[in-house]
Amino acid sequence: MQYDLFDELIKPFSRTIIELAPQTELPKVLAQHPHGVQLGQQYVPYQLLRSKRRSIGFLITDEGLRITAPRWVSIAEINAAIISKQRWVLSKLQEQQDRPVPQKAQAIEWQSGATLPFLGVNATLKVEFGTPSFFDPETAVLTLNLPTDASPAQCKKHLQAWLMSQARRTFSQRLPFYADQLGVTYHSFTLTSANTRWGSCNSQGKIRLNWRLIHFSPHLIDYVIAHELAHLIEMNHSARFWATVERVFPEYDQAREQLKQLGLAALPQF
Image 1 (cartoon, one colour):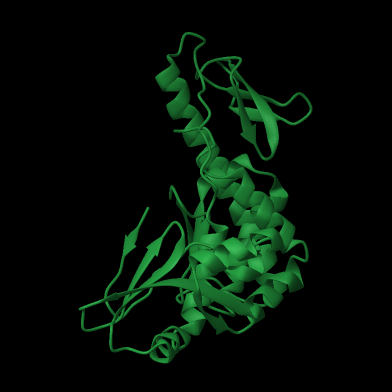
Image 2 (cartoon, rainbow, N blue to C red):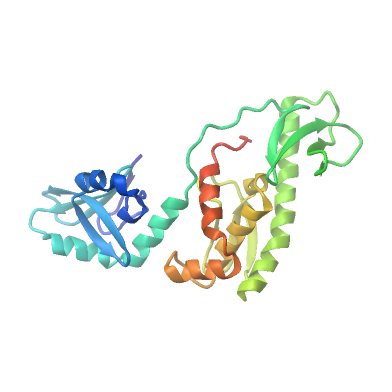
């Protein structure tokens, strides 16, 4: 996968930094990316290609950062261009790290007996007419209020609507709690069905949370909520940002890694 960039801009790039690579892999990383620049406490390697172009270009590949620069531009000038955007670069690098690891999606027959994750529990689907849709945590049965002869398509549509309603209810309860802990005020929140992000926050205090988080445990949902609200204090992924997250969610590092390993693509596809 590649991301083309404007000549003078850098977009998110993959986690090819020595700090995060096991020591046994460092020689390989250095061999593939002999050039690099120190950004704060992180050393970021990059591949350098020379061309006839008149400006420095940036390209992100699966192997990391690739720089294309005119032959007359020195290494010092290239490094200076990267350093000038240090905060932005490190922030986008962190975002890239937090992206879910692609995994194979679950194939589900949308009918009684199907299983799917709900709030971190492997729930069994039961189609039953006449009772409100609900989840019983003691039996791990998720009952859908539908006729027993409902088609798989009807079950799927009804289940998605119910899951989204549960996501909205759960997020509405946890957002005020962490906003109070952080001493911030958010403007509003909406559900999103993004395929690559768990959530987002803008400078106006508008929070967007992926409704499919409802598949995960309350602990992981809390992490994402604390993460997004912390952006109202630090609109970046700097050391100060992570210190802010840690203040209200001390286990953030483990939760972040767990969320990444679980992945979005492996969840039931609606």
